[in-house]
Length: 159
Image 1 (tube, rainbow, N blue to C red):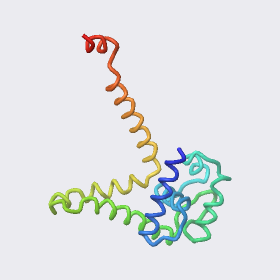
Image 2 (cartoon, one colour; image 1 turned 90 degrees about the horizontal axis):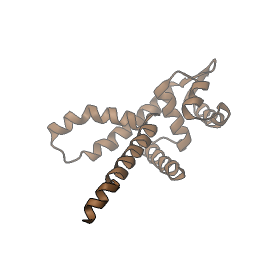
Image 3 (cartoon, one colour; image 1 turned 30 degrees about the vertical axis):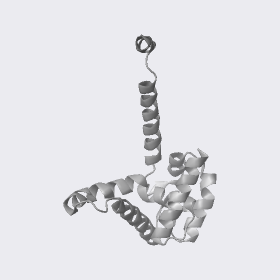
């Protein structure tokens, strides 16, 4: 679990650097989560992130100090400045994915443009980590089944 957090922090640091954003990984993650679900109540935001409002407070304060978010009656949303940062982060994620397609024929690359934008959005979405973890567990379960033959199969292979 710790390795996943460290990897995610490294990804967010690189993304911030490429987007020219001067925010720490936790603030970037929070800004993205708010951008995807805004306006969102602080209670719902904490629930989606599996934490308490109190634990969110320092990150929310940093984002407010940077004029990236605003709150109104327990609801939080991005400010104009926050929207610009959010758009730059999403644009850089899209460009990063587009670099993966370098060398593809132009017609195929054009066909992939919409899929790349959707994938960039999903890679930054709050549910992607849960979906990826579930997919990994599924793959591990399937590969475990494929590697471990049934007892009858072991007997037949020894003959």
